[in-house]
Image (cartoon, rainbow over all chains, first blue to last red; front, top):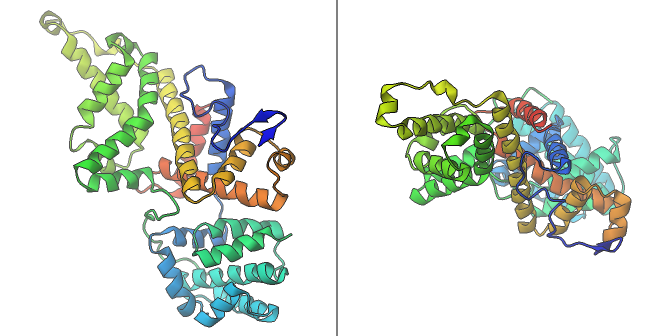
Length: 168
Length: 235
């Protein structure tokens, strides 16, 4: 791949930044470090971030597998229909609405987070399988949620979330 | 959403994200001697450069070559069974812990190199000083070293996930300053795919950086403050 005649490769380091710096290192290295630290400082406080923190724990996946049918009252068959795309758009909307109500009355954090996971998956499934956004929240916000959540969920969930994020 | 019950303890690593520097070293130290060696190597890799910069900027530099002093420090302290254990038990940031320990080591070298006669006529250790600027340089170099280490780890994580291209998009955009339009031309990716790739890789770097900065019982708010402090010192 090239840019204006300059050939690059996937392993090319960024402009000198990975080299050992000294007190007289060029401004670009310092500016880069500051930019990247700034990205790390962007700590979000969305509800889904709490779900992501839970999923990042060592037992995240097993927690999800247990909490979804129990705390989120979503049967394995219903979950499979969301993931596989066999649920109709109406069924996905109904699942989303049920999950939303469950979040509001959740007695524990596990209930709230499991229901939030199903809520996010329902919106993603509708986009991924039916190309319809069933939420009034902006697509930009949802795309960010889909991408962020996709990194800590099982493969089947990840596929649906990323497919949704790729929809126009 | 209702008020959360008591939070779960500090999350351990899973396959997707690296452990915090604290948990990384703790897990290494909890293993056998090989683990302790790995922990020491991790510390040396991250902090040799910053310690050398600190040393060179200080009046301690008359003691000898920076490389020798830093390697001597590592050999002396990291070989002690309790050195990293004591850090793990403290609530201090590793870079402050190492700098303090390094200063103690340098004062020891001063005392050891004095002749018997000089020991009889005490020389003020205040003649050997490291000023605020030297400490600022150390923290600056430590910040840069941490960012480099985070980039290395994040790139490895992307590669392990088959996301080399994601990392490349992120670097070309956030580090090399290429716009989306330039990357569209360069890599033939559409806007949606660009967003997914850049954000995915960026999230890995963000998580890695925050994890590397964390220390025992550090909260998200404290890590935010630490990041702000590092952004100030690398000005």
